[in-house]
Image 1: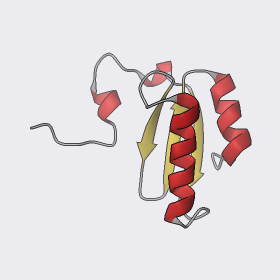
Image 2 (image 1 turned 45 degrees about the vertical axis):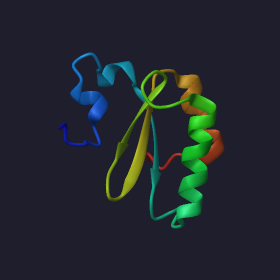
Image 3 (image 1 turned 180 degrees about the horizontal axis):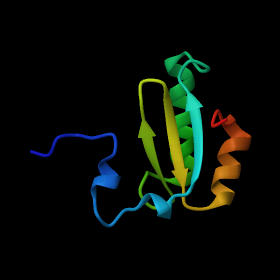
Length: 86
């Protein structure tokens, strides 16, 4: 059985970070409730679909990052939720 990985899509040789060059990062600490994260993730899926075609995600203990394929999607996500990417 394959072990789950935060980077599952990037483990697949057909995926490349260069396909998703537009990041949006949200820090866990700035949105401390589970309800806030449920809303963000549900909104993202409603607007962009599941990860794989238009975006990929990366999760760490400090933040969650969405890597978008198109700058327009990055802009929509940033306007809706902000971007803690610096």
